[in-house]
Length: 411
Image (cartoon, rainbow, N blue to C red; front, side):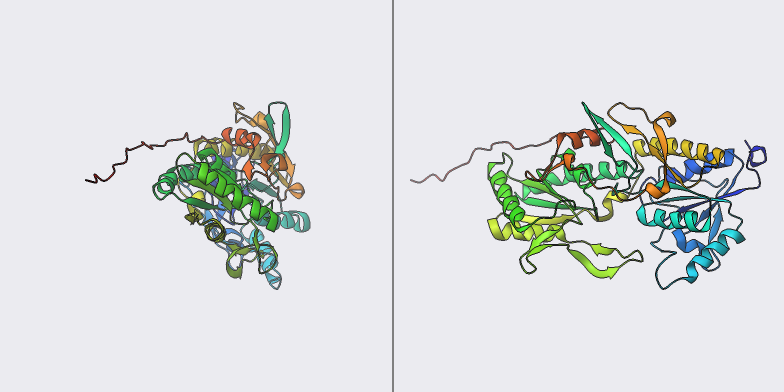
């Protein structure tokens, strides 16, 4: 179908990606673009998030341009620009002027809580037609998705980008176990997650023994209990190593402050006021080694989780949500965000299993208490079941032959 045949011929739809990248962004843009073009829209892309609507603007034509949906990251690039940053009031005027000057009739804004928060302000306060599209590897946006597990039916979050990132952490944790075994270490694996432990839990599908998450600060009492459990589990281990997953935003007890504190990579903050976390794995490993004498070491997974190729689940996930975007465009229902209604093992990714939530109801959503046992420092079976509906478990692979020890021949 050509643009001239569509219902909205002569109208322009703009796509914007902001904040941290994921492997599912290009897949999202291709899916949304294809459906918008079918409706007749001219589709443009705004470069580098909200930064592309400042100054003279930086906008490109995407109507018929190639987009590789398997390729990770975003072809539009990204930034953490805040169009409503305090002290930069002129930014809002620049954004509104560029929306008008480029003839943008509707925007599809792909992002997490910060990017979508700016989109919400444009929609609510300035009347700009906006459709939000969820994106975050942290999986901390409230999508009002329900997870069926046995007789339980629990609200969860499920955002494009998270399934592929979760699989990356599963693969990473699985591979690095050979290193941990070779050096008989307690390996503390640091995983992205500023406010929530959704992604940290992925390591459990690769056999992680323990986990620490932002939702449960490690108090003095919890620290003592945690380190004791590490020591007991290490000495009882058949293979002579342990794997511990810790979210970067975990608060770890610091005797200097006599309370749990964050560990920061630097004192800098982005335009949305967020500090740069990083290094908690090293602090946790250091305290384990100091208290137990065990060979503990911290490893930061860093940007590995959000890099590389888009996974199959996310490819299908973005197409289904883009179908819902097309429906919202046809109905001219703006200020909404497409979401998956239910998730369980075997549930199809089909448009009939989607819904649209009000952008004003979108906020951060922590890991439910039922998914993490804070006394055992482990994720529960119900969370494992949630992950297995969107990612693949890595089975245990251990080669640990009991070689016979040779003793000196004393004559």
